[in-house]
Amino acid sequence: MKSSIPKVLHMIHGKPIIHYVVDSIKQLKSENNIVVIGPKGDEIKNAIANYHEGHPVTFAVQKEPKGTGDAMKTAVQKLKGFSGTVLVLSGDTPLISTSTLQKFLKLHKQNKEDISIISFIAEGTHSYGRIIREGDRVRAIIEDRDANEVQKKIKEVNSGIYAIKSHALKLLKEITINKAKGEYYLTDIVDIAVKKGYKVGAHILGSETELTGINTREDLHNACHYLKDRILSEWMENGVSFIDTSSVFIHPDAKIGMDTVIYPNVHIEGKTIIGKGCTIYPNVRIADSTVGNYVTIKDSTVIESSTINKNATVGPFAHLRPGSIIGPSSKIGNFVEIKKSVIGEGTKASHLSYLGDAEIGKNVNIGAGTITCNYDGKEKHKTIIEDDVFVGSDTQLIAPVRVGKGAYIGAGSTITRNVPPLSLAVSRADQKHIEKWAFKKQSKGKRK
Image (cartoon, rainbow, N blue to C red; front, side):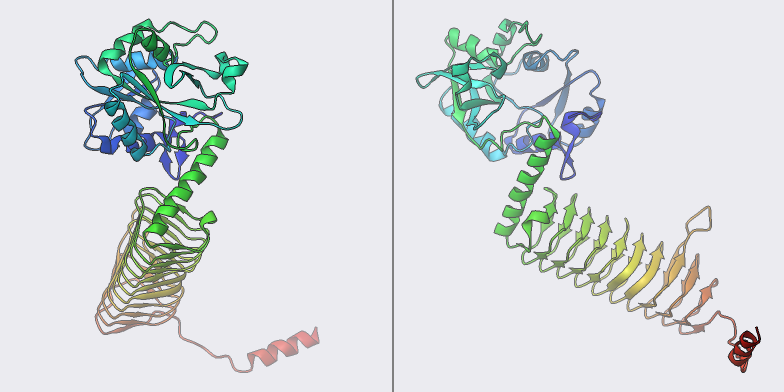
């Protein structure tokens, strides 16, 4: 990967690779989940320690990177007294689906196999281990680097996913080190098991793409696009429309309501929830937010950790920063920035305003160029605007300040004190006219 970041922590649609693997086993109701990490695996440990909610996670530390066989030996130390089936997955295979694993475990049980392997058909040049058969029976797995020219032509390959009965785990002790590589290959357990009369089976399940491991940046890119298409296909099946699927990215944890229409170049990130009947126009990014029913998000808008209630309109070129709550049927328009503020029902801030640390009531009009001046250089302060207030254009509200219900603020005012309800607040210099000033200026210019 040519990176300082551990491979399994590289991101696909905002989630690390390892999270996808963990997600694939959540519905399997496993008794325990063991993650093998290296001696410097704290980053990986921190990334998943609290992610697998409701299921125990145990970490086993592989002291030296001596291959998959040694990693498995490390994991088995945490399985003392266990009786049942051990499912082995690779942490860098994020596209494996729960349904494929369920089919695999069902076949493993039905066939009463001691060791089962998920295999798949690989086309073209690759480095997968080949499944060696004698007739229909699995004989061994040969790694690509050890395969001869005849074996390299075999298309059935090893996915690296195994189901192993607990009584067969003792065979791990018989795996010897590969001198050329200096590693213990878990694949060698197959040959050992066959020679000792254990029942071994390989089952062609899933596609090559689903079972591909991530080893390069190109693999990561391809996985991202494969997952994108899979996610969008699922949403279209559930009543969501996309104008151009090639340019839209939806986080796997996001939710979208029926009859929502999504235009090109939209990114929906994190645990975002979009209601039904929404329209999301081009170049919008929504992260970890909740959008109610029948909301319109106009072009080039950014929404972060915020809530937009039903029938509201946001954008174009608006920015909702974390902690913002937009009320029903309200309007946040062109070049308006909202930060950690509550906007009441039916309120309008149509253009060119900054509203930070504010509580704004119902049916308030925020004129163009309005600013809540919330920071005094040391602390943030709150502005409160009650229902039915009219705020004229180019107004500065110097927090902390409160504007009472039904009050009016004249355009161009700087408000430093509380405004009583139903009153008019005006803070501006008197307008003066200097008669014939332009004529005098013009005459002076001619004399020069």
